[in-house]
Image (cartoon, rainbow, N blue to C red; front, side):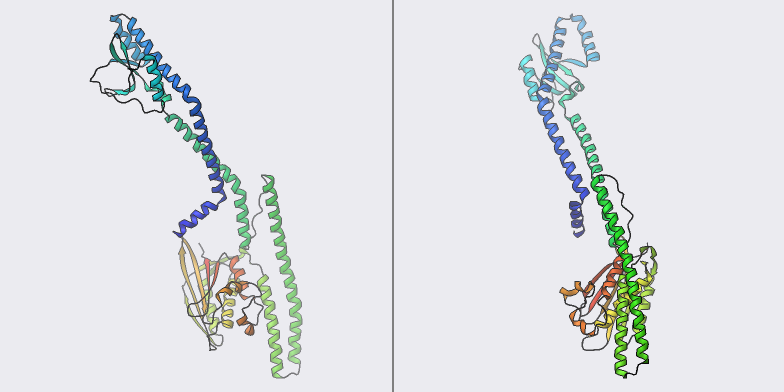
Length: 451
C-alpha cells in the first residue's frame, strides 16, 4: 500500500507525466470538440444525401421494371445484381425481417424516404437471413424488396470515424510523450547533475544548447560546479597550510615542555592541552578532506569492522560485542570508512558509558539486507549510555555541535559525527541516528554492496 502511494505521488509530481497528461487532455478535448462540430455540421447533408440515394435507386428501379418487357425482366434483374449490386425479391408475409440498422441518422432518413415513397415503405437490415440495406416498394399493387449493398451506405456507420479518431488520438498521445520528453530531458539532466554534486561527485558539464533559457541555466550550473570545485581546492590548500603552521609551534611547545622544569601535574595538564589542540586540528582536516569517488574500490567491510572492534576492545574500560556477517563487500575508500567507524567508536567511548559506571559497552553488527532487489550492507553500532533527547538527535550531525550533557567531558571540536555524515554521504550510503531501546544511542549505516 505504501509503495503504491509513493508511485502515485511520483506520478502526480513528475514533470514528464504532468506535461504528458495536460497535452493528452488538451488533445482529447480538441478531438471531442472537432468530432462534435463535424457531426453537427455534416448531419443534415449526410441524411439528405443518403435519403436521396435511396429514393433515386428505388424510383429508377421501379421505373425500369415497370416499363420493361416481361420477357426481359429476368435479364434486367440479373444486370441490376451483377452491375449495380441491387437485388429485387418479392415481399411475402412469411419473410423473416430484422429491424433497420441501428444508426443515429436512421430515423431522419426513414422520414425523408417515406415522405417521397409513401408512408408504408419498410426498412430492414436483413430479410430471410440475407444481410443488407432493404427497402420495400410497390408495383401495381405488388410489394417487393430492394436490397442495396451496405458498402454504398458506409456513411451510416461511425466505425470509420471512430477508427480515424483513435488513430489520430494515438498519434497525438505519442506526440505529447515526445514533447514531454523534450521538455523534461534538460531538467532530468540538471537533476542528475545536482544529485551527483550532493554525493560528492563532479558531474559532466551540461550541454549548452537548445532554448535560450536552457542554455543560460546549464551555463550557470556549469559555472557553479567549477566555482565549487575551486572553493574545495582552495579550502583544502588553506587548511593544509593552517595545519602546518599550527602544528609546527605545537611541536616546539611540546619540546619546550619536555625540557621545562615543571611539576608532574602541570606537565601532564599542558601535555593534555597540546594533545587536545592537535586532535582538534586533525578533526578540521578530516572534515575538510574531499573524498574522490574515483578512488573507490571494493572494501571488505566485514574485515574492517572486525579490526575496528578488536582495536576498541584494547581500550581501557571498553566492552565490545560484535555480530558481523562474513564476506560483505562495499564500494568505497577504506581509509575514510575506517575513520568513520573509529569516530563512531570514539563517540560511544566518550558519551556512551553505562549510567552509574565507568564501563562503556558497544554492540557492533553487520548484515546484508535485500530491499527491492538491491542488496545493502546494514551496519549498526550501539552504546548503552543515557542516549540523547529525541528533539536533539538531528543536531548531532551539525558541525561544531555537542549536546549539553556531553560538554563537560568533550575533548574535540564537535566534528566527529559531522565527519561521519560527510563521508557516508559521499559513499552514497544512508545514515540514521536513534535512541536504543533500553538506553543509549544507535547509529545505523546502509551502504550499497559491490555488484
